[in-house]
Image (cartoon, rainbow, N blue to C red; front, side, top):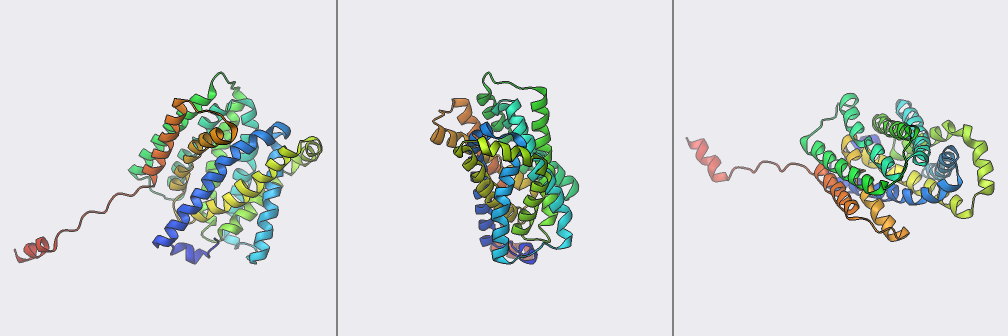
Length: 317
């Protein structure tokens, strides 16, 4: 799934659209599954160490695939976007989110981080010249309302510190900035190249946490370490690559809106794998998230063509 930029530019055919939608679906499912794994890994690893371990695991897989496919280094024009997205999204976002979720309850963190897709749409319009069609705005409004409902239902009597709120907002801003920076890079490099070297940049940025990772890995239970490796291989290496593949074929705003399906999937996965029975407000919020995604990705119907007889009669007048 790493076509050349020329192929990406001409990928308007229905088959390419279906592949991009499928890639986005893989990303959303794997990112939702990450929340379950983070619960285990986050109990044994500090935020920076968990981010570094996840990135190193993902980078090993991505580099191996890159070598097998012999794609080599991305073009020079792709590097600014790769560097910025690597530092912001792969590095700062993961550390800030891991740390923030230790300072605030899960519901508050979900509400704050879900500001990210809105910021992506606004930044995409400002820096990428993307349009903000009414359906996208309406869909994001519906999905954000659903994310707030899910967050409120999950918060309960949880805690929220000022530091935690700030960290979650930083995570949302870093996520949005990283996505908008990555989009131009995909015009020059393949999805695999942009993801691989973005992950490597993020890992380098997190190297100050290497000592913590070594110390904590020696004491962590095997299940936590396996969950950290899972986070690196699937929600990072695979999901970020499928994300880049889909992002190269649509706007940043539409891709950001797609991630509003994540809260709904998290609710279902927590129900199935953790036995956490969702409340009615949680289910309603999840339904709103999915409805908003459907609206944001829908396209207005083309105007109906005039009947041939009407056209001929108009010509004869």
